[in-house]
Length: 111
Length: 117
Image: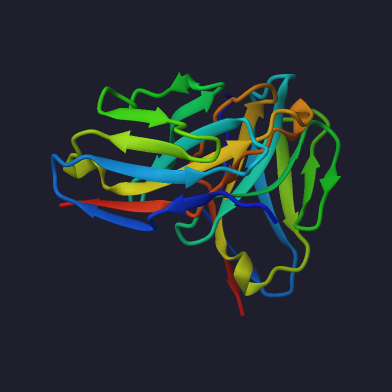
């Protein structure tokens, strides 16, 4: 799996959009970008994934650059419950490929 | 919403004892996984399991570890002789590969905290 680089920590004011960047400059053509989060040592929670198009679901939006070397996870209206460690993971899409977690970004939502 | 269930939430054991961590994956899922997270460290892959056999295992998953799907609903991780360094959160995950490959999403349980004394 390609290596990802994320900032160690970020703060965001409650109610504002949280934008979490991720660099994955060595991503391969068959690798997707997945985002998970982990709230206070709970099990990792799936957020969103994408290949090359921007994606949106009820939790977040994912913006992937045209060259696919970086992406941004957007939480449109951050709440205190969004305080967590966010992991950007690139992974081939087929079969039962494991998830390789890095250290992620610790996002703190400030009241 | 379907979820992965893990029991117990906290297991305390003496060094050298055997422990079995239990997981009930989401009912229509076919792939099962165990991960662990030592306090303050990354989430690490241990093993994946499909069609009643191990698909992949990490270097951590040595002869002390084994996995089993004893019936149609449970998935277990056994540690034969626990060591102090086995103390960690253990997470079970499952995924449904009958979805399109692009939707091969792993869903995680809340974890079992294993404390080896």
